Amino acid sequence: MLMVFTIVSLAAKAGGLLESWREVPLWVMIAVLFFAGVSHFTPVKHEFVKMIPPVFPAKLFLVYFTGVIEIVGAFLLMSTDYRKMASLALVFFLVAIFPANYYAGVKKIPFRNSPPLSALSRGVVQLIFIVALLVGGGWI
Image (cartoon, rainbow, N blue to C red; front, side, top):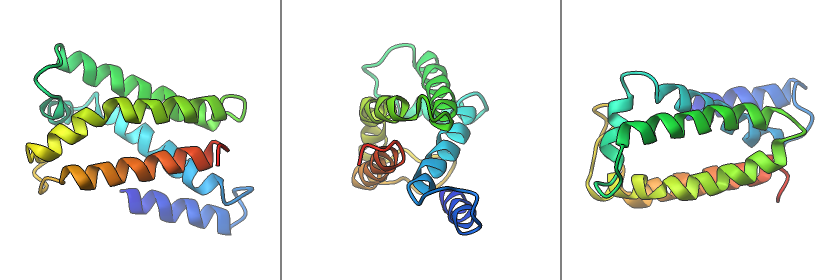
């Protein structure tokens, strides 16, 4: 799905629908965050619950809460008035949810019957997302 979002964003830039190349990672992240956020309210939510370390209580609430943050964040990134602030807030959000990704990687928790990603792979993906938010938000 990430590849599809990237290809569509690149095509949008090539077709003149985006003003600058900086918008390519921005729109990729908007799509990723929106669809990931929505998935927190589908049966997939139980997959997210498994990723949360045991030390955290109210796991289903955390899944719903992070889903709302992702959806709202995607919409805020669409607004040029809020884009810069939202991108930085979402960077902090990604750092805050990294323990769940690390835990899932270390414990080899699969997601939707896919082979589990390692903690290193999950960390690399999160770093790519952080860079995309910083570029798309105009921080770098």
